Length: 453
Image 1 (cartoon, rainbow, N blue to C red):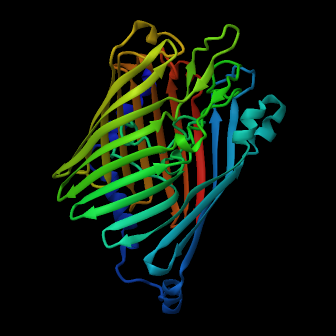
Image 2 (spheres, helix red, strand yellow; image 1 turned 135 degrees about the vertical axis):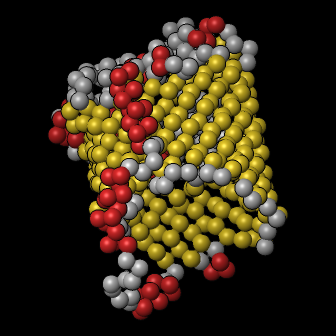
Image 3 (cartoon, rainbow, N blue to C red; image 1 turned 90 degrees about the horizontal axis):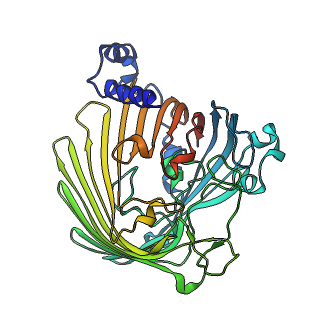
């Protein structure tokens, strides 16, 4: 795996070099497609009809798959060697322009995965089939408008992304994540929408936001029987579900020329459950979600082709099985570089520091150190008149690779404006602690084809 890591990093280095002569040659060959004069006639009646329409229906049909090339089984005995995913997914989105300059958006998706039928459904647990074979969910479902010239409101299921970090999250914690196949979900599907009531007040360069989140949705995590789930036992989970459990958040954001700054506060539930020690002998542990509060700040500053970004957050109320509740500080610093043509390079460094650390927190099932550093690298480069996209992402947990790492390489090609096909490779380097201590054999080849309409 270390060899694979070195190979990918070398690949990233090659991709980050200035444009190669081969690329220039290809651009010369394909230069004919850059003609400024359109060779088709514009149907103005269709354009005017589309401009007058108050609704717009869009969507996509997508096939995505995973092939596990290392022979392995889940802890329940299911064979995960070979085809493990053949997801056929339909996405539909309806956008509406309403009177008084209000608008609304409704989005839904569903998929069927025949891989489980092909491999034999009896080999999988009912939990795995329930969440991965046939699945429906809603995305955006909101209505938005102006109450006054300086006050906006947005109601319904939506995504609110705080901060600018990509792979490592500090402030971006308002929406839960889809973690059923870690590092496999694309960014557009990673965050789960939740119902919010959001009010934004604008004053010159500043925006003050107040958010109430009455709908409590949590991370989708691997199920018993998945090759990402350790053990064979399913534990009961205690979820907050009452109106008084509503989450609250607020932020103040200022956007200026070349830089921005934001301040955040929130009273939330931890989207990822933890084990709770039961006081009654004979009763197994159960999973619970901690209520915690957060204060933090973030900012971005642009200098030439560089964008510097930083985020810091103080969290209080993070619970552990082997200890009481603790406080933690998360800090992130990152750089984005856009100085090379058609190339983006992003590096992020994160550290989570736990106050009043007790040595037993390092034992299972907590497995948390006083310092939890992480490093993320992402390189994206476009070729062939922006039709071929190559991206490599690496995440290293810890100061070295002993804590494990994840590497993903994607190659996508725009066959047409609405049709994209791609292949990729997802590698998990096994670490000494959770969660990467059990992912070592889960490497997989991935493929996809998506038609948008």
